[in-house]
Image 1 (cartoon, rainbow, N blue to C red):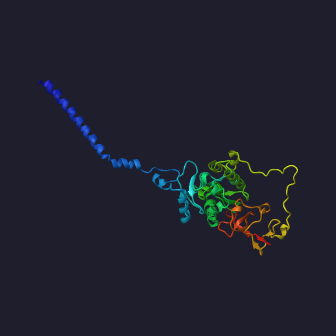
Image 2: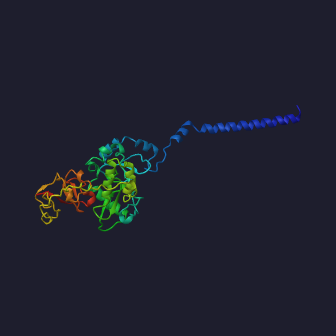
Image 3: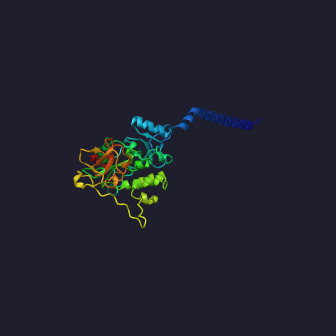
Length: 341
């Protein structure tokens, strides 16, 4: 073999040696990446920006809504349901909950609209389109999930007022942005001190949307989204008009309301009415309101849901939750009991 051939063979051997070394190095790196490490990377919890839970926790929170409700009622704490795109969900019946700390909030439109950073609105996952017949469309339902006045007063004056920089003796009420009548939550993300005249004009909007949902004219999701975005435009956005009594049929005479039998001055401040209802003490408390009473007394939106006795609220409206926790919660508290003489 010539010296030239020997040199070529030597160079080939060097190349093969280097290639073998590279292969061994690659094999070593692959061995360091164990199946367990690969598995851990694949199953690492992913952040959920909507509710602050990792994917593992969110999966555990996806229990049936009935379990959420039982837990919340037993412990007095909110159960956070998996948040879909849109409004956050909190199962917190009968309790004001605080999923976030609010500060530096600013109302819009003279106090009629909340700050979307602080009060974006949130909903109760227990209320769904499938069960509205047994929840928000059933008389008395909201009374079972409304927090007591002790909690709402704390949320209003100790939390919301400072956060929204409200001071002094203002006409306002702690309002649910997405109302309980549409399955709104009791979380602080759904509550704000609405400044303005009382009774609140938003109450009529809430009643109209509830009626539209319960009659099948509007979906629950659409009503929630519209009122959370801007309650003042929600009816026009959804094409929902207020229910107006039709005019009497031609040729008939409308039935007039019975004339009051007592002047307001003799009723200790109660409106003139034919039912002998008064704010003067000494009679029987009104536990069963007479038919048509709201034609004479300014009844709150949830009047028919009350399970106590008739009571005047501080804002001059009337509730049927006298003697129960949370009476006149959103109306300045209770003022006087109503009696029948």
